[in-house]
Amino acid sequence: AQSVAQPEDQVNVAEGNPLTVKCTYSVSGNPYLFWYVQYPNRGLQFLLKYITGDNLVKGSYGFEAEFNKSQTSFHLKKPSALVSDSALYFCAVRDGNYGQNFVFGPGTRLSVLP
Amino acid sequence: DGGITQSPKYLFRKEGQNVTLSCEQNLNHDAMYWYRQDPGQGLRLIYYSQIVNDFQKGDIAEGYSVSREKKESFPLTVTSAQKNPTAFYLCASRGGPREPQHFGDGTRLSIL
Image (cartoon, rainbow over all chains, first blue to last red; front, side, top):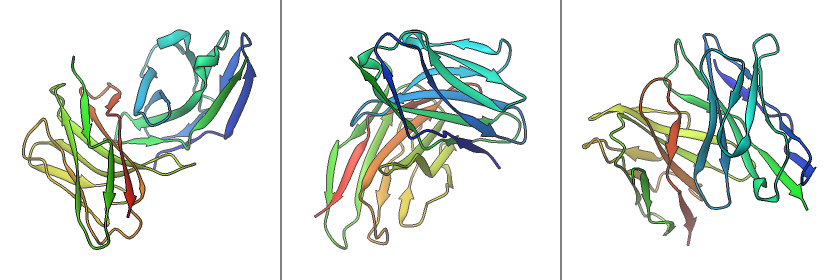
């Protein structure tokens, strides 16, 4: 069975500082990993994905994520946070070998303070 | 522009009433999904469809029904059997097997 954990409900960071939003996962086969962002009363917007290849993945709006197979983690990072990055962030996993469906983590609320 | 359109944005249900949420996509995607989002929780899968005229139950299908008569459309009916329907409902579609899901902007359902 697939599962995703986002250990922090809330992350606070000052504008201009680096940010990290954590995600760990469990799948039987090859992990397909995704990060999404959600603004209030909106749908989820895709940020980036890891399917195969380079462990460091770059995505939209300056975000990147590092795939770590041994730690089964896929943390989202950004070198310099903006106030406009404040939103709800979801990590999702899909089993590339066996799964048709995506499993989402519970979400992490990021607040960037001016 | 290609995308997913959900309507209405807000919907109110009376006791004993069935309501239908619309989801239309022009991305030419085969796979479509319905999720329920409650405060403080992640997305929970209600139903999904990999192809026209076929759909499968997700984790919380009880009290819901769907149809997939056209590739572009995947409506969700919230029946009177769903006793706690108040939530934010999200529709998504997906292209190839390595592609992410694309989401609509959701429908917020409340009880009158």
